[in-house]
Image (cartoon, rainbow, N blue to C red; front, side, top):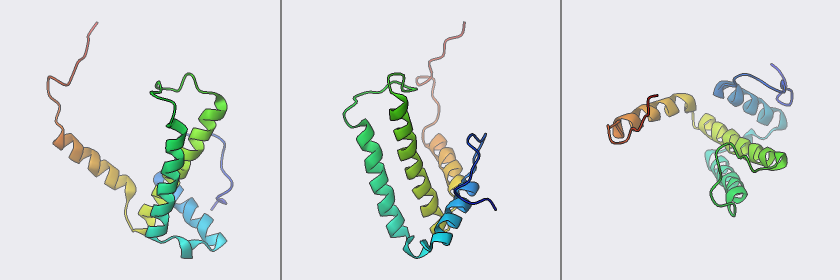
Length: 126
C-alpha cells in the first residue's frame, strides 16, 4: 500500500474506498484511531463545515465556476471542502456504513420523492 502522504498530483477518479483506506492508514500509523469515535469525528466535521461556511460568509451569491475568485481563494476552498469530505468518509467508516451505496440509495429515494413533472422541465430544442 502506498503511504497516505504520497499520491499522484492529478488522478482521474478517486473512490470513496481509496479515501477510506488511506485515512484509516493515516490514523493507524499515528495512533489516532483511539480518538476517532463517531462523536469526535462528527464534531470535527461540524467544525470544518463552519470553516467552509466562513469562506462564503460575506461574498453574497457566487457564480458557478467561481470566475471572480483568485487562485488562492480556490485553493483555500479546495482544502476546506476536502476536510469536510475526509471527515465524512471517516465518520461513515467508523460507523460501519457504506457511504457510496448510501448516497446512491438516497438519490433514488429523492427521485421517487420528487418526480419529474412537465412543469419543472424547461428545455429548448434548437
